[in-house]
Image (cartoon, rainbow, N blue to C red):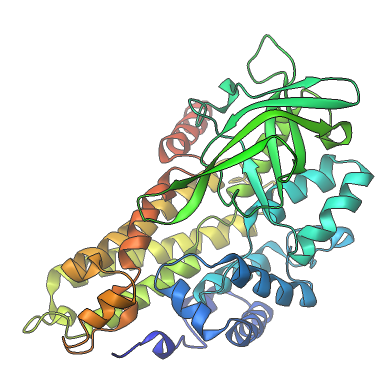
Length: 415
């Protein structure tokens, strides 16, 4: 059976080059060339088919990035950042996805890392930042609870001040990668306050601390990524408190602002568009030429146009800087548009594949080996990506929340 993953050439020049200056074009070529060698072909093929990278694949890739100092491009230089501009970071993030690289786990680099170097003590910076930069420490996020997802301020997990330590009791849910994380950052209620957002504090602690129990949640795509995490009389050392007691809500807003940047995943979307174009050239259904099918071409053209608009919008918003006119609403615009595009692409691939999309794994591929050599990257994993992709419109702030932010901003600016 033919596997066409290795036959996915990306032209050195494309429409994005028209939006970049000479320095950014050269930077993009350097990053692309490095990633082609840094990502093993087997890893690239698995990720390209829609499967999540394994922990070992991520660790190996992070070690390579760390050797070049590329693990945390957005961090200040004094803490190990690259000193790149926002547009350079956008290009780098896009090329990671465009080359089907394992990616950089966001929990350490994009979430708790910036919180620690901004609000943490020097001891916390010395203890935690090096492991994040090297890729040796994997983190998970303990925010959501049963009944406290989008309404995070209603969380009930408590951390009682016992003098030399805090005693933690409660439960977190939908905790991604908790089953192999080394450390966790979480929110817990330390005090009662008039406003629900008050009295919440942020903590960091090791996942092997006694009293922590992790139970798997197998998602609809049949993968184990999510977990329940239970805390029973867990002792958090006093130095596990991040910043000031009762300021956890402020730190969480700061953290979520970082989570929502770089969430467009335009590189992966562009790769999916290329995948659809190759699918149209495949003799999937005898007698049906998708490259001449008006409905297929219309849907593909529409989503490709939306993707190009998203790429241009991201460049424009990032070019304005953190204090630009789109600083408040830009992340919501990008996140909302990206979620819709990612889900549309996954739906288009699955609907185009029809019953072939239902297969996954080597046994299924072998069973269809006599049907004309259907490329494995069109079959194995397509349904996984579609099913997991339903969560794109939920994590990082639901689509409804993004629309509410945009509506409030529009109403507040009306004369």
